[in-house]
Amino acid sequence: MPEREAPAGAGAMRLQVRGLTVRFGGLAALTDVDLDVAESQVVGLIGPNGAGKTTVFNAVSGLVRTAAGTITVAGRPAPRAPQGLARAGVARTLQGLGLFPGLSVRENVEVGVLGASDPAARALEALDDLGIADRAALPVGALPYPEQKKVALARALVADPRLLLLDEPAGGLGAADIAELDAVVRRVAATGCAVLLVEHHVDFVMSLCDRVVVLDFGRVIADGTPDAVRRDPAVTAAYLGIEVTAS
Ligand SMILES: Nc1ncnc2c1ncn2[C@@H]1O[C@H](COP(=O)(O)OP(=O)(O)OP(=O)(O)O)[C@@H](O)[C@H]1O
Image (cartoon, rainbow, N blue to C red; front, side, top):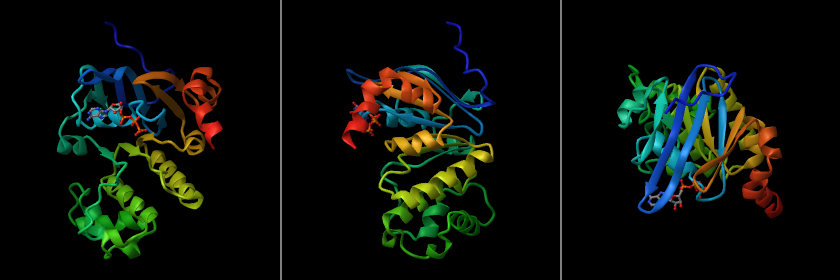
């Protein structure tokens, strides 16, 4: 089968997913999913609960077995092991944060450091970039939730990723924290990093992202600019209409 082309106008492709299919027993969690994220691009992945968004992240991160399809990072098959992914410049945050409550803020960020001569200093820099260096010595569990989210983000950013996967980064945050997050993601993308984010906060996605991909029942039902996706009747029916009436 000929390889499907990347969208016209995209820069160097950092993540390319073609025909991705994932099954859990009899359940088709993803079917024939295509997805591209170029350097410096911020792409939003949205869809109703259970649509398959986290499964896409898990497939890219090597955490689930794929039944079909290819995943390439910077033109090479995506490594399947955590160390290989880190070396390929892939970093990820988790919906549940995944912090180590017994460790300090700085130690949690050090977990993400890759090859720095002074990991503690590098972790402090990453915390400083997010304005929470003064929390470094505190146990991470002592921080309020929005600051814990920043720690998880700092842990992902500390290795200077080239592909950043953010799982519901705005979840549980108020307007001021979301505005800060928006600025951080733009800053990271401006360095050339490709960003793919799963998010239920539709306004945040639509204002931040260059492109939005919509999943429904494991299939891509739309892929385009935020404006085009907002106007897409299939998206309104499957997702946005429900969100609008619910809010
Ligand atoms: N490890 C697993 N074993 C079996 N089924 C799974 C597993 N992980 C996910 N699923 C199922 O696959 C489908 C897609 O789940 P996924 O978590 O990717 O959806 P999602 O779009 O991220 O949902 P949400 O917005 O609720 O986080 C769902 O039906 C889910 O129940």
